[in-house]
Length: 272
Image (cartoon, rainbow, N blue to C red):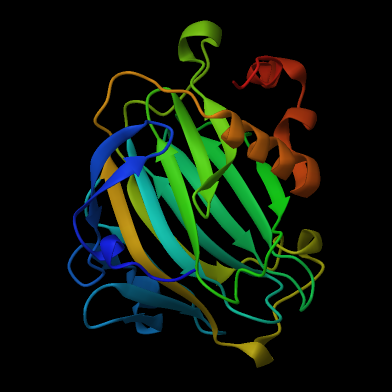
């Protein structure tokens, strides 16, 4: 995916799933984020603040978080994963509040052996409750070039997007089913790379091979578009067809099939 200068400036854009023209603010990785102390020696930031890399070796992983918190926004980042053998490596881009009753919206990329697909793990926590996992085998190599990953979070729904196309929708069922949904706690943007080889690949049976370290994840063009509209606008028919295709051809785990029906009542309600 080629870089666009509009992603580095304040720009007007069409906000998919909200259908409004909004202002997108580019994050400066020098000024607008805090580097996690536990891995600060493993972080490199470009002089212009447009890009950042996180690395993992035997000594440490690394991560960052935005200084600001946000309540309802669209979050976009371009990300390129570490190439080749990456079993056991976990690379993340997610939103989270703090505390035991925290809210969280996750993109987690689980590494694999060379030639096997990287797994994309998505999850949602609301008021400390999770159990909303959906997992996919990626249909492209996320280490060959940058891809755009987006979270659209508004009062009606959460949409996970890859390259500006929706792959997952989670609706707000607070009113109809009395289920928790993240509506009250502002969240920061987080990203990290770390050793998850006790569970990440084949249930932990495949471990990190440190001869391939450092493992490096490249982030650029982190943009945040604040929500500005009360009225909901549904997804297009093209969006719905694409989500259905991804689920049919690439989904390998769906929480709706893993828990008792009483725990996942939203799964019996049509998404659209």
